[in-house]
Amino acid sequence: MKTQTESVKQHILDTIEDQAGIEASELHNRLLNEDYFIIGTYKAKQWLGDEAFEAIQKIKEYEQDNFGECSTDLSDPERVCNMLAYILGDEILDKSATLQQKWDEQLDEIDLKEIATEIAS
Image (tube, rainbow, N blue to C red; front, side, top):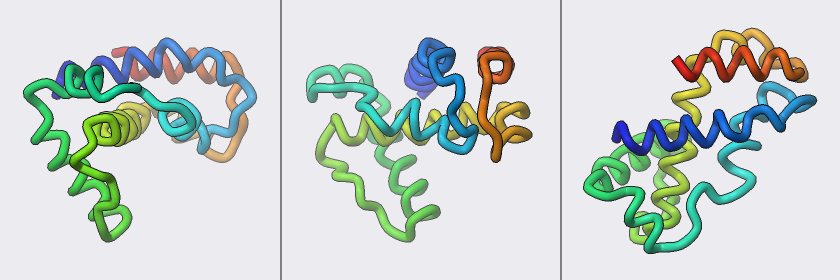
């Protein structure tokens, strides 16, 4: 799952600078839920590769723990891929102390650079 995690991290790093003025608590949603991470079944299957079953397990556990049931259509590679990206993004952003400290505040360009630096390492 290392390849997928790095891919999501790179997506965050590529898009985070454009988020100045957003509430910190909305950053994850904006980066990984307002638009599809991967579009297309073929591309999703390629991205998941040999990690498809591990991805399904991770999604099932995450949704069960957070929502009490699994609602993602696990037979749809595109949905699996996008939900996995959402979960991995949550784990990646959770490592940012700046994001946690600013949770109820708007983020400025300096905050976003600090968050990017924290998650890049």
